[in-house]
Image (cartoon, rainbow, N blue to C red; front, side):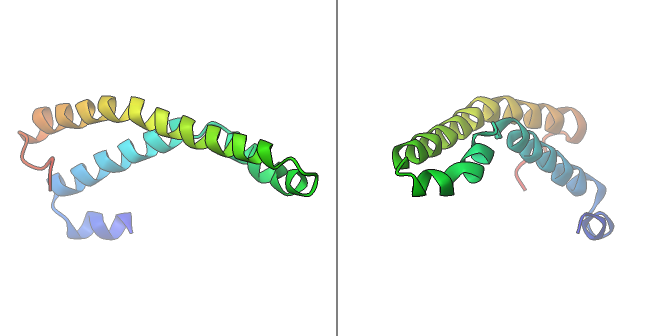
Length: 96
């Protein structure tokens, strides 16, 4: 898909696509805390042994931490996107 877009899009537009891809990847990487993996691994055994409160606890912690990390990272990455847009593209292609 990326190769197709690189061929079809103009250089400046493709660069904006790459910047947004980097931002999305960084948010995803830093918002993963590992709680989801513990929940996936243990949820069935907890459900059968009447530890449903633990499932709710881990689920709420995972969602809260992911939301918190997105809220923390998004302003920083937005500033980065505006900086790149101003310095490299004269603010033309930030909001396609």
